[in-house]
Length: 179
Image (tube, rainbow, N blue to C red):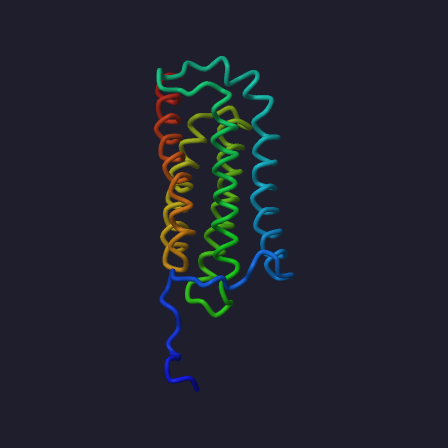
C-alpha cells in the first residue's frame, strides 16, 4: 500500500468523476436520467397544451403572472438542471448512503410534478392544483436536501426548481383567490 494513500472514503459531495459520461455506464445513466425527465416534461406538455390555449386564458391572473412564453423557457431550463442533478446522483456507487432514498424522492417528485399539471390544467382546477403543489414543494425540498448530502452540486442544481415551484405556489394561490 502506498503510504500516501488513504483507506478512508472521500467526503460526501467531493465526488471525483466516478462515472465519466463517455463510459458505457455513464451513457446508460445519462440516458436514464434524461429519459425520466423528458417523459415528465412531455406528459406535462401534453396535459397543459389545450388548457393553456383555452381555459387558462379565461382566468383572472395576478399582476405578477409571467407571460405564457416564459413558462416553457423556465421549465426547459429546470428540466435540464434536474436531469443533470439526477445523473450526478445515479452515477454514485450503489452503496452510497441515502442513494436509494434520493432516487425514490426524485421519482416521486416527478410523478407529483405531472400530478400538478393534471390537477391544475387537466382538471381546470386551481384548488386541485393548490392541494397538489404543497406536497410537491415538500418533495422537491426533501429531494434537494438528500441530493445535497450525496453530491453538493446535485443538491444545488435543484435550487432553481425549488425557487420556481415556490413562485408557482404563490401564483397558484393568487389564481385560486382571484377566481
